[in-house]
Image 1 (tube, rainbow, N blue to C red):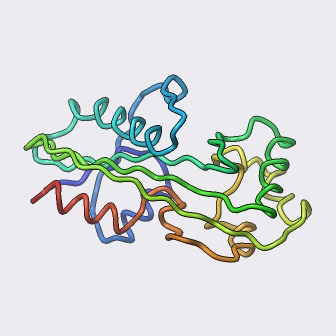
Image 2: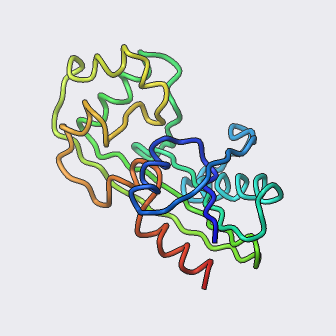
Length: 189
C-alpha cells in the first residue's frame, strides 16, 4: 500500500523516512486556530482527525494516510508558537525550573477499508540549567517562531541542555515512531 504523510513538517518527513518508509506528502488546508480544546490530548487528536478528514477525499483508494499534531504543555498550559521574542525568552527560560511536555497525536487512516486508528504519546522533558545567552542565537534567528513552546528539543541549542527525557526525541519532534508503526500495522491488518 502507498503511504501518504499528511504533514508539511520537515521533521515528520525525516522521521518517517528514517523509519524506512517511501511516501508522498500532502498538506491539509484547515484553520487550526479555530479548533480549540482545553485538554492537550483531545486537542491534538481533534486536529489530527480534522487533517485526515480534509485530506481523505483527495487520496488514492489503495493508500494509508498518516496525520498528526503536536502541542507543548508547560505548567498546565498549552503553549502555541510565540508571537514575540520577549514571549519566546519568557517561555523558554521557564523550562529551567520545571519540566515541559509534548503531546503528539497520530491518526492513521486506511483509505481502502475506512479503518481509522489513533493514539497519543506524551513526553516529559527535563532541562539542565541554561542562561538567556545560551538560547539567544536560536531566538534572534527567528527559528523560535516555527516551534510551539519556543523550543525544539532535538535541535541546538536545546538538545545539549536536556537532562533527561521520559519518552523519545522523535515524539518530541512530532511523530512517535513506536506508536506510528503500531497504528500502521493496525490499519493494514
